[in-house]
Every structure is written in structure tokens, then in C-alpha cells.
Length: 282
Length: 282
Image (cartoon, rainbow over all chains, first blue to last red; front, top):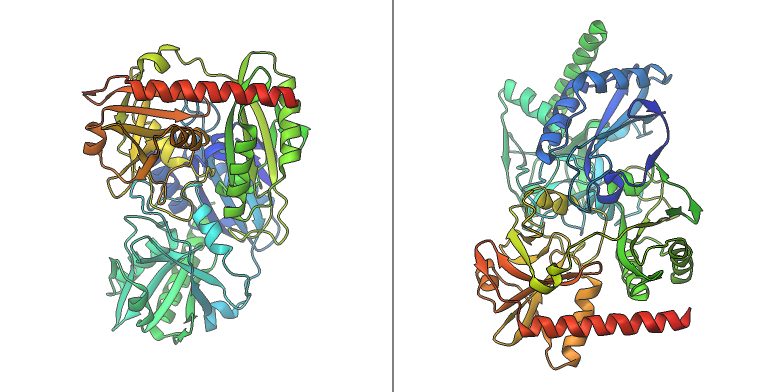
């Protein structure tokens, strides 16, 4: 099910700058019982991304309306909503058109069938060879230039490995191919500072707020492989999976520890509360 | 005029990974008297790019055939042929599908109406604030992740400035937003080494061969703004414009010098010979 600029379609003009240059942004959102989870936060980030790229934001009201229209037509308990906003067509080469008419594409997809034990017993991760390019002007935003992630994800086929961790050109560990990364050491909670590369995820920011509210402020900094491998607990997160503990990176094992577990519980409760609240507003 | 996988169409599935992730490559080719100039070299680079990204190359024969079919239908003396090859649809998230069926899009566009005096009297350039990200795994190839160039090109609207020069994160000058960059100092010819970022252009490589054959080997190295500004002559090049001398960068002026002029003449002759030869083969 797809809505392109409000119309039910499956194709886009090849002149669209999203196709020509990856000139746009996207959001990937969990749909639970017909409701897009944390939709407001996703649209807020999309708005911020549009500002960074000078793309006119289509508006919270319009996108919410279209998201709800799509979700109503879906009859499974869970799904994935993807929203893409591009700079539309036009302009001359890389130069953007004088009047930008953004393209918005909303599509619904089946929820991936990840085994439930990933969130309980944890996953296995590896370090990818493909590096994240250093680029402060694009760091943090969820833009459509995702070749680095595609190349990193192509590095392994072993189904026993669920995620690849990516380093930047300075040998700092940044994030997973599709997740943000946290670790716990001596009762402190760390994640990478996303000033040079990486995507500032919605679940990442929720975890940061919830943890700070519970006396465990997240320390954003730069860290190496060795530092990560000496951690007590490690986990990854995104809007679709929530939190997956990591039980093994390469040959190093980690326990699924109590702090990860309590953050999972807090996130579950907050997500549930948020869904109920949004459900009441409907 | 557009051919998508051999069929006359104007739209592409939104599931195409070119649209979803910029997961593909492109070539921009001059068409002169119905003939795609340096087509073989462009297809060779496309093949190399496909190998780097593990995308099956659609083949020289098929792409040449379709390029010629399109060019035959065009009735102006000059045009621009764009060839895009993507990883097609499918896969799960960033993970590529087990069987990749690439998408090929060939499109013809009017030749841009650049004033003739750009190539004779030179152009004005500026330095862009947007940096090129450092990423050896994608450096050199003409992939579809072009947000950096789009952002750099959005920095100015002044029609008196024709090109923006881009630096990487290490303060090295790399190339123009749509061109490769050369400079001459003390009778030596320099261009940037494209090991960390940038696109290895077809005209760039032809200039390197022609110049070496005429006793002026090109030195590929890393250089700063100051080094560039102290040059005797500077020029940019690509497949559509050929060579444009630069007569001014920011407030620093350059003469359109004899070495640039002789490289222009050599390139013109080589291009003409190549077109005649390819024309005879038709």
C-alpha cells in the first residue's frame, strides 16, 4: 500500500531527485494495532532533516492524516510504515529548482519476523569493514544516501549474525547498519556522539531521556573497538526492533545484564503508554 | 525520451533501491550528431563501479544498443545521455536480495546552453562550505549518493559564479561540484588523488593519458586551498563541458594560460577523432 503525494500509486518519475541523487530523507516507523508508534517524534525529526537539507516540510498535519489513512487499511496487528520525502523533480543537475515541490511517499510493509529470543537472549554482531564517511553536514539526519549501509550489510550472509557494527574513518565505533549502539561499563551508559556521521535515532533519543530521568544520564562520546569490547553490557536499538541486547561481538561474549533489562522495561512501558495515549486521542 | 529496462517508460517502482537508498551508479555522456561520445569509456567505468558495488553489470552490448536506439530518435546536434544502473528492487532493508536484477535507465536531455565564452575566457569559481565525506570504499566511483554535491551547489545563486570547489574533511581541495579540477604550477600539471572521495571522471582520465603522451605527466596528489590559489593556471573538466579554464577563484585571478589552451586543443582533436572513428564503425 503506497501513497505518493496523496494518491494511490506505485511508481515515481525517474526525474525525481530522490532517484537521481538520493536527494531526500526517510523515516521507518512501527505500526501497532493500526497506529504509527511515536509518529510525532518521527515527523519532528523529518522536519528537522528537511530544514538541514532546505527541503520544504510537507507538514505534520498532512503526513499524519496520510499515515492514518494508510494504517486504517492494514489488518495485521503490526506493520512498518516508511515515509520518504524528496526534493521532487526539477533543477539543473545538482542545482535545486527555484521552487521546490517535495515528493512524499508513504508505504506500509509487513512487520519483519524477527525471532522473539533476540530481545530476550540477545544477538550476535560483527564489525564491518565498510566505514562511515566523515561528514558533519549530513551527520545525524536520516537521508537517502545509504550506500555505506548497503555495502556494510553485504559483507556477511551468515544467518547467525544479526547486526554489523560500523566504524568511521577515525576508527571510532558509531552504530549498527540499521541500529544505534549503547554500552554499559561500571554502571555508566554510553553511546556514540553523532557529530561526524551516523543517524540520530528516535529510540536512541527516547532511551536518553528515559535513562536521564532515572538517574542514568547517557554519556555521548567517541570510543574504539577495544573500549566497546571491554563493556559490561551492550545493546542496539531502532524503531522497529526496540532494544536487542548483544550477547556476542566477533568472539567476545557479553551477558544480557540488569541495566539493559531495566532500560528495555522502561522503553516497553513508555511505548505502551504512548500508544494508549495516542489511541485515546484518535 | 527514456528507456527503463529496454521499455519506453517514465516511471520507476518506488521499491527500486536506487530510490530507497541511492543504491546504484550513473554516467552522464555528451551526444554529438546522434553519437554518444566516449561511450566505451563510460561503459567501462560503469562496469568498474558495478564491480565495486557488487551490482551485476547489464553489459556493454545491451547498453550500447539502447543508447544508440535513443540517440537515433534525437534530432538536435547535441544532447546529454544519462545512464543509471541500480541494484533493482528487493532485499530486506539494506540487505541486498539473493538474486540481484539490476534496473537500467537511459534518458536523453537537451544539451545545456552554456555560453561559449566559458571555454575561451574562463569561469569564476568559489570554495564551498559543504565538505566531501572521507570514504575510500566509495571514492572514485560515480554512485547515486550525491547529497554532498546537491548541498554544495545550493550554497550560491549568483549567476556570475559557474562552479563551486569542494574540500574534504582534511582541508584538501578535491574537485568541483560537477567537475574534476587541474592546476598548473611551474610548468607541471596537478590534479587531486581521489583515494578518499571524489569522482574519477572520464575526461580527467583522457587528459591524464593525452598529457602524459605529450611529455606532461599529471601529478596526482593532495593539495590545500593556498596551494591551488598560488597556481599559474587552473581548469575544470567533465564530459559535457570539456574543459573550462578558471579565471577567478573567490578574489584571486588567473590567466587563461598556454598550457590549459594546448590541453584544450588536444582534447578537442582527440574527441573529434574518436567521434569520426566511432561514426565509421556504426
